Amino acid sequence: MNRCLPFIALLALSPGLALADPLPGLPPAGQQAYRDYQNAPNHRAFAIAPGGAWAWHASADSTDVAEAAAINECQANTVQKCVLYASNEHVVFAARHWPELWGPYADRATAARAKRGKLPGERLADLAFRDAQSKPTSIDKLVGKVVLVHLWGSWCSPCRKEMPELASLQKALDGQKDIAFVFLQMREPYATASEWLKKQHLDLPLADSGSRNESDEQLHLGDNTRIVDRDIARTFPTTYVLDKRGLIIFSHTGAVHDWPQYKAFLRHAATHSGK
Image 1: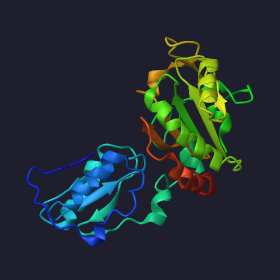
Image 2: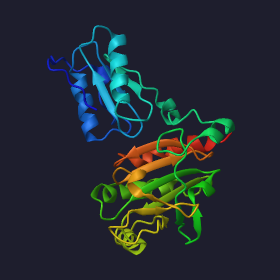
Image 3: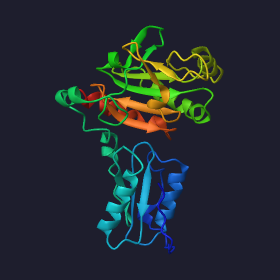
Image 4: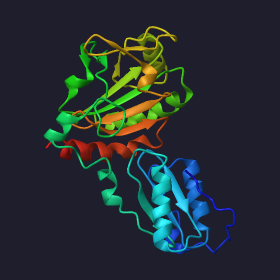
């Protein structure tokens, strides 16, 4: 979220805050917010989170106040952990720890107590589907792998826009057997979604959610019951990442900017979760 105070005095750009490279995960609006931040008066701080959330605070009484406000305002707009990117004239972002933010990962006892839900630490509904080889399976049967579950439709403009990046991410991790991708089409037949991917020359392991048409809002579960798609996806696209114990570690509604950078996150989860 962009937080701009009503009285912003323009300052000379500090070399320490130069935007040589895009901030990790931020869409263009977030990149512009950081440029605005660079020209804001001290005390100021800029926070970011995986998935593309951001917030900044300026003209605070102290640096500590600015940092706490930026983190809190960022956290109000995401279920992911927010961290500081910059404080006053200094970039404080720890790039090597960025892929760790989906952790810490739950132990066996904690995972056993997890309830069904949509938030980090919860267990996603046991969606039933046919995998890319047309074999019937469900989310719970993938425990032991890190799983990216993506709910999308070829009729959905944001979905179409991010599919090439998702294809790049999947291809980069194709050889890693403990990471799985589950692409489930929503409110359209499998054939329609598959044909669109072919026309775009996107080679993705598309699973079949069982959806039949644009008015089909029911998703099948592993216990032969059903769930309304909006109960797990307020809008499309919606993405979940599950750790090796089947718990949600990333929950995001809407398109994600720069999917390929999440390769490091997925690999970290594959290495460290389920221990």
